[in-house]
Length: 224
Ligand code: 6PG
Image (cartoon, rainbow, N blue to C red; front, side, top):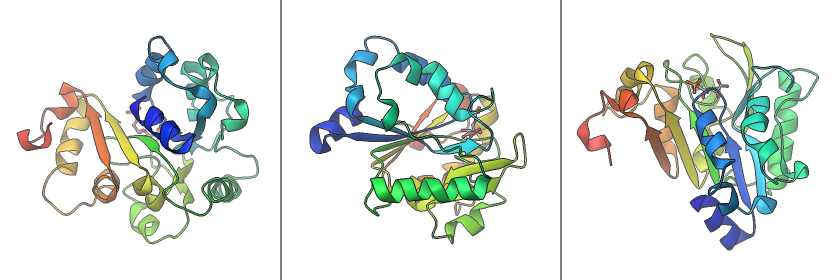
């Protein structure tokens, strides 16, 4: 809400990329209720996704479907301002199309997002940048990539490192004991090798919202 107010006041619009998975559900459901719903000028909000499973939005595993059900169907955001990642014709074509949308909307700047929400898997992936694909991704100039998940739905589309790290604020959400060891690795002093660590450390501003279970192994110095 604060980032939306700030962006709309400064630039007349707020561009946000939503996270998928389960953790953000609670955030989206809260945002759809008062007093939070009324605190955002939804007419100025432009909604994108940080990543998507390459399945139609009718599929119950679709990140787009989850965001529509928990938030977008309950707030007065303009449908023309909602930009889903899924497009028929295969993940490569969908990624290319999404990149064209972003480059057009952001006039070629990789820093176009005011806020990006992203989760983290127990393996340290974030968005759909996985340990098996991050080395190639960081050297790939594309803003949107087709990737492959080793678990769950294989074909994915994801924002790439320059766009994730260029956001005004990159807000990570991590909850649950199964994230504790990974989160400790992300915040360790060791060289970052996990995607979430690489992206978080390179971000213009990374903020982590974590619950006690996920924070259980963090050094006290990491918690503000
Ligand atoms: C996805 C997400 C993925 C997710 C993490 C954490 O499409 O699944 O984008 O990156 O954020 O896997 O998922 P949970 O929030 O369900 O633990």
